[in-house]
Structure formats: C-alpha cells, structure tokens
Length: 245
Image (cartoon, rainbow, N blue to C red; front, side):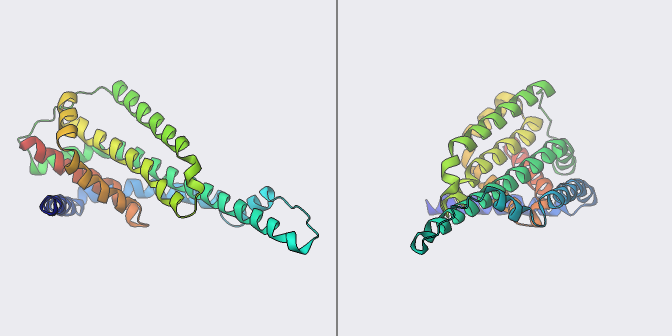
C-alpha cells in the first residue's frame, strides 16, 4: 500500500514539474491573464455589491428581537443571534465558493483546446487528437454534470450549518464538479468518447492523484487565479502520456 502511494506521489510530482515548465512559457502566461482579468472583474463586482456594511445590514434585517425583559432569559436572544450570524456567514461562504468554482470551470472550458494543442505541439507532435465530440453533445453533458452538482448541494444542505463539519462537507461536491469538468474538457479533446471512458475507469487512481492536489491549489488565495491554465496543462500531460502507453 505504501509503495503504491509513493509511486502515485512520484508520478504526480512528475506531471506537475512538466506543467510548471510549460506554464512559464510566454504563450501559456498570456492565456493566464484571461482568467485573471475575468477574476478581477468578478471580485470587483462582488466587493462593490456585498462590501462595506452589507453583512451588518443583512444581519439586522434577519435578526429577530424577542424583547426579553427578564435577565435570565437573555441567553435565548443571544443564542438566536448567534444562529442567525452563523447561518448568514455559511450562506455567504457557500455562495463565494460556488461562484468562484463556476467561474474557474467556465474559463477552463474555453481555454482547454488552446492548452491541449500547445502541449501536444511542444511535447507530443506524433500524437493525434481523436476527440470528436460535438459542441451540442458537450453542452448537454455539461448540463447533466451541473444538474447533478446542484442536486448534491441540495442533498448536503443540512450539513453545511454544522460547525466545523459544514466547511469540509461543502468541498466534496465542489471537488466532484472540478474533477468531472476538467477531465472532460481535456480528455474529450484527446481521446474518442469510448477511449476516454476506458481511461477514466482503468486509471481512476492516477487521475484522482492529479485532480486532488490541483483542486487544493485552486482553493489557495492568489494561487487560485493561476490554477485554471496550470490544471489544464497538468492533465494534458497526463492524458498524452496515457495515450502514449
């Protein structure tokens, strides 16, 4: 078991090193500025709308004043205020993570063909691009993925408000969506549909060993802005290597 983990770590490190070298080329750096631009616009709008005293205003709007005059009953008001504050905080954090993830994945879908072609031309010129999925089929596939994602969000909703546990539970459907869409964006441009299904089935642990740390990088402030292009590059190396073998 430990040898398998060590082997997986070595392989992941190898693909990350390849992606790092490509990432700092002028072409991929130029592509990186696109998500940075959209991220800047997105967060500027978010801060403009929700910045300042919005949290306090929302709290005051949602707060229920029980007007308890008996001193020993004031703990009820304090407990209720705490529940409202925590609920509002979890809701805003929930929206923050979802919109950040969706923005990142939309950018990845747009940039994937450019990154895949760059990696192929530079490192794997003899490899063919066998992806033949039409735009309409891809859109329907993405629609199905997003539908399942929102279903997962709804099913897990009660757990989001459990202290400490909720902040970790929300990461699970987000990782599922992150992995599912990135693998589709890159894999469907390299493999035929049946080949990609076989690769995902046979190389599940290897793919997970790449997507998990990539997802972790996307959650880190600042670094998360650079994650889309780096993630696409890493997965492109992985899939071309699998195609070669």
